[in-house]
Length: 335
Ligand SMILES: Cc1ncc(COP(=O)(O)O)c(C=O)c1O
Image 1 (cartoon, protein in one colour):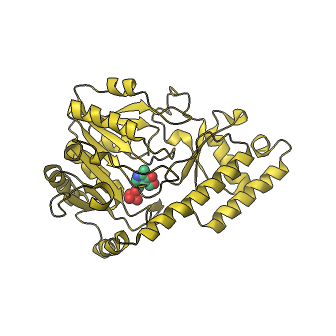
Image 2 (tube, helix red, strand yellow):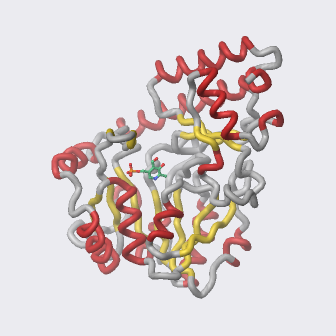
Image 3 (cartoon, rainbow, N blue to C red):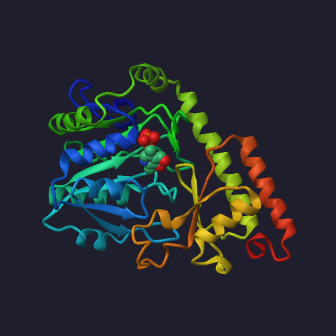
């Protein structure tokens, strides 16, 4: 925290080690949200935030990120605050869009949190996966923010030990953390003790070694993902997607479906799996109002992940190319 963000954190009082960011986030929400408190979320969002806030008795309030660049209207954002707003959730680099929030955007969020006396709960799991000129800045390092920010992050993405639950089997090393002012960290620790008690000790030792990796490791993480990002953009462009927004961080590409498949994200993904054997995630899973169809973008996007080995990604690209050859008007029409 000191090296990357210039933050002074007391390891004994300001840190809670948990089972992945997922638990860090849940324990943080349960620690600070009372029944009826409102929590601002950017939409689309990683899918665990909304349910977790609701489970804690809070009310998620959504602020849209607008395509193609996933910017937000600062005035609309400010107007979303009410006397019940307790916290803002900020995930940058962002899943599913790959957006890295700009310093100007972070300043606007920080200013709103300071003036409304709100907490900012961050999800920084993609902090080391940023591309080109885009760098991760923790909002906690902005003026007056450390005292009102809960940082959550984990080993999962930086060290490729991410969790996946598949029926009775699950994977992942499940080490994450919250960093917060000591009074808030103490409340988070109380929740953590009551939901999982502790994170696995051998993996905490491994985490210590991992986090002390050389700067070369972090550099090569960026360059290898950037090359995979470029390949994914190229493959999907050939497929007929108009990629207006190249991911600036994370390992996702959120691609808008072309005209022929608009509003059919689930059908498209199903066909891609059945005919090509390549999996993606329908965008509607990330927009909060997918059931009542308020948001005109909710079923127009598909999320592709490029966090696989070069061999697997090359095999996926090859399968997609083969489908493309079969199609008389290109894969997207043919499917
Ligand atoms: C934005 C975001 N936060 C958190 C997680 C989960 O992190 P963890 O494995 O540390 O629980 C993911 C995994 O997909 C994610 O994309």
